[in-house]
Length: 314
Image 1 (tube, rainbow, N blue to C red):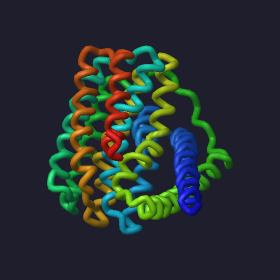
Image 2 (image 1 turned 180 degrees about the horizontal axis):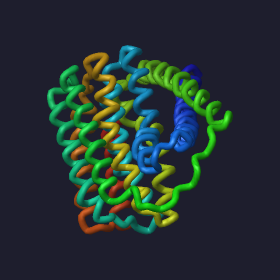
Image 3 (image 1 turned 90 degrees about the vertical axis):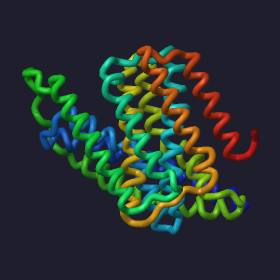
């Protein structure tokens, strides 16, 4: 009975975390436009980072609750879910996903480089303060390069832009409620993880790389599948690139400034090889400029195998 209650707490807290992130994302985007930020800056910085807020907040909550193994497991699990689960589902629902030249020339190499940097950092199963700084510097370089590249493609197209919207009271309300919801949701989510892991004798890292990772990847899943159905492949895939870079460089880097992070045995033995495999498959699939339905199905099959290995079912 007690286990059922904590599982319910986990599901509700995760729901609050994801929904609060959505409210915060929508309201901050509107406030950004009202303050005169360009659509691209709002898209890359606010939207790109916003979909990864659940991962970041839950990682901080875990670290401050004495669970240093959760942030890295959460980031690895989220990236695996983003590629195998989200891209897999999006390509199936969308019929196929077209990959633009800019994604191949810019985003795929950067994702590969960012993942290689991350793997180098966690190779010894710990993330120290200097390594956390290296990850954050890597993200700054990625952000600046992306901004510069896109701006050179012609953001300022000379067209007349609509007048700035005014900041409404409802936008501010959603902003405040979103922040409060993130704080409350993350606190109870981590409390539930601690209780469930003790009752079932499952490592907290395993719960982080599976259940938390799937839950915190829901924003990416919803955005990408909706975009794929509408034929907006670039939105569906661009969302994944930005989120994955943020996860491995910032979701691990920022908590790493406040304490030494560790990798639990299963995350290192199963999570790291799966992350490498998924990233390489994603890059290889993107080179022909189209991700087909059969590739999406193959992605989902690998994800099922990954989950089975984590829980010793296969």
